[in-house]
Amino acid sequence: MSDNEFEYAGSDAADGTWDDEGDFAEYEGDFADLEAEAAQEAMCLPTVAIVGRPNVGKSTLVNRILGRREAVVEDIPGVTRDRISYEANWAGRRFLVQDTGGWEPDAKGMQQSIAAQAEVAMRTADAIVVVVDATVGATATDEAVARVLRRSKTPVILAANKVDDQRTEAEAATLWSMGLGEPHTISAAHGRGTGDLLDVILEKLPETPREGTGGTGPRRIALIGKPNVGKSSLLNKLTGENRSVVDNVAGTTVDPVDSLVELGGRTWKFIDTAGLRKKVNQASGHEFYASLRTKGAIEAAEVAIVLIDASQPITEQDQRVLSMVVESGRALVIAYNKWDLVDEDRRYQLEKEIDREMVQIPWAMRVNISAQTGRAMQKLVPAIDTALESWDKRIPTGRLNNWLRDVMAATPPPLRGGKLPKVLFATQAATRPPTFVLFSSGFLEAGYRRFLERRLREEFGFDGSPVRVNVRVREKRAKK
Picture 1: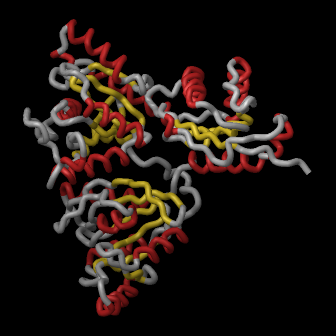
Picture 2: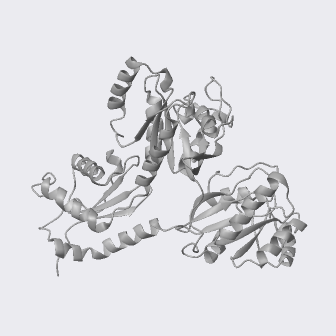
Picture 3: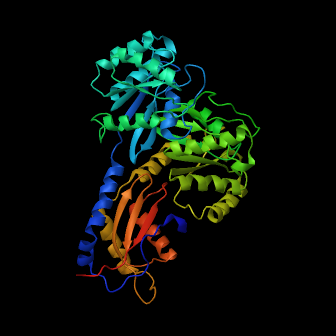
């Protein structure tokens, strides 16, 4: 773990000696606050579903709520097909926003499946935002959506979209006739009125999701790597069809390609991404935006599978890709691809390269595969499961502190300024990735912090997941 993964607050000087019981009582409120934050982090988030007929601006509104371009937007109907959940934050409160395909009451074929996904979203969400094009007014489809939603016990918010001026705002008043309450006028494209809409959404959302609505669908896996390492070939092998275009020319994939894949009796969502160039600022045109979308795919994923060409030496580019995943805090599986091209000499060299180049991430899960031949593909699911289990793992506070006391008694930290720093209390403040906070009476040397992280992994696992440790240095408070 690098030094910059540790944060310090307060002073690095502490006067006097520390007494466990007295000091614990002194900072008990701080510890209680941290544990409350940890409980909040572990809790499932409430969900708001964005629904409406095709091409009314649902995905544009989702992007506006997120503050970034995540959902795909085109000026043609039917681009969004699945219901896709994204984590959003407004006024310090976190929730899930669910983008859906256009809902049509009498849809057939694929459109019927899309409408079914929207209906599931309406049934399971904690609040529903129905989007209507104010420049067109309420159509027969809008009225059909309204009839369904008026029977729902879930809070419904009516958003009149594409209101760019006062004239259109006056026309939006006719939407009161839909019987869904006040039409909140917005322009998702320009941001007009969206802040007020978000305030209303937060008023309607419960603090916790209603029972039975937890979960956000299949676990999300991003396929990451430099160009031409076999990401699209791996996705095609997993799906059993030519879902992604494959060519020997590097950079064939530009947009992230989402695919639902059945593996190990479960459904997973795989995202094939564009190959990451050496530096984003070296890319131009569509390559630049492809790099940005790849970064977005990493942020939206829960675990990243980084593909490395095992038949070639590990490059600085490979290491930069790995660093990006680690910094994002995602679970990590390294897949050494093209193993069918690796002979005995290359295996020996590769092991030396791994020992030399991967010394900072010995905890990453490793699998040796061949997307071309299908070799060892069955090893992917156990590696992904292990990484996600570590990513979600929470250590009880009592067990953590008992372990910490034993470790520090056996190997105390180095003296600093003639005084022995002491970690008074520790708690796990978050998961995804596991994040720990240590309250210390003094500065802890970088070497000792790395020692604590190694012992933490030895005791509790965390294979396949980054671990973040924040140290808060507190001065001894004067006793009254």
